[in-house]
Image 1 (cartoon, rainbow, N blue to C red):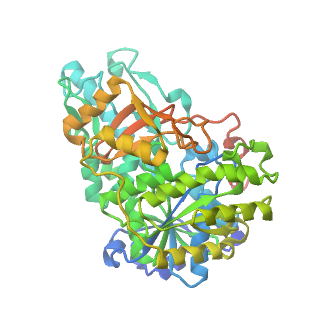
Image 2: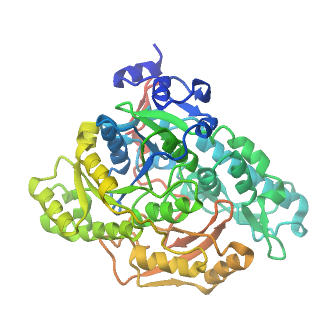
Image 3: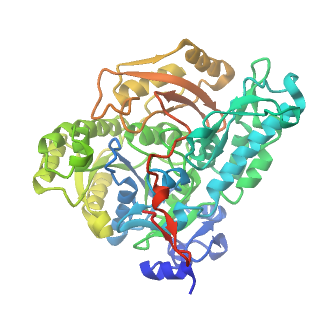
Length: 557
């Protein structure tokens, strides 16, 4: 018996053909990667009905070290909908190896609400992220190759190259490096660095492209730097987009897996939401909406990051509809943390801290209401939660006039998500929906930044140095002023300061840099001390991950 079958028997996993058959996917459009995962040919989407399903987006209150369980809730909600006779599936991002070996130790849900085969998904899966890494670094190699042969008088200004390299791992020492030293045969010496693959513009393009043709066009539109005269230079001028697309031709097909309860799941693409736009691929979401009546997806981190970007960037692209409803995940532990309780004291009952910390959740409720989307607050239950604390939470939700439900999908799977599923269906059926974008594209870039800062974060002011403002104005001069902005900032606070918990007020958002993602179709605005290449924590999750002598992975949550 193979290792794959041994693990499958332990959790009663179904053959992937069975999952595909339930969705109506033709066998000839399924490419198996082993027995329990497969890629779906894009022709399947063309033959299905167009966007017939309703999209349910899962976001959260501001993350804490205590954990909120957003992916777990998304998976459990999908299982709950299927349990009550609805045709539902979940669409999620692929985990990055950086968080898997760094802080999280896995990102496929938890307890009875997981997507499987978890170890495969958490590690190399079907190789999509490796392909994205290779495509990104191919372009970097072609940039330096052009510098090498053109020297200083060619297409590119060697002192004004914006395209860096990437790898799918947390490695702080690679943030800033010097390359090309050691003589003329090694190229032109210059400063550059690495970012994590989840922050790559190629990853963003991969997740925003509608098909292979659109993917190639977007890759060609990547700005890699500037000419000696100050004009933007694009990947198409290096004739790089064809080879990059060739590396991605298989990866662009969505990956089909399943939940522990056998609900179909598409896991595809993985941009971070604190740096990039933080949602799975448009291709995957469109396909899911063609195959199911209800599609549950998640946006990264909290409402001011993933949800705002989902609304103002992804939906704006016009390939998928606005969500029909939104779930905001909260926990009593996180409410207490934002109410001032230390991490090691979160299990103790503290109704006062819940009331104080609710101010953070209240801001996220306000944020979703800004966009006119019906919402439900889902309380992800933990064993230490007390009846008194739950009542306090319920009373606060009633005062806020917001739908809410308790959820115990970690411990009970879809059965524990029945109340949440019921409230979501009521929201879809009864609550008014009047989706609107936060800002018009015609608005100047600086005003877009200020609008997000004031309305979504609650900032009083936005500050930036003159050189950063001039860089943003140059983007407008070069013809990119009508793009949306993608703000990169800490996920641990509504502000740019990760230590500012709760609901910060009267703060100034500090803009520290800006970059152009012309292929993806947005301008990235960096705030505070955000890093595009994370570092491993003092005790990384990698220290507890192992493999047995017979090849069974251990230690991945």
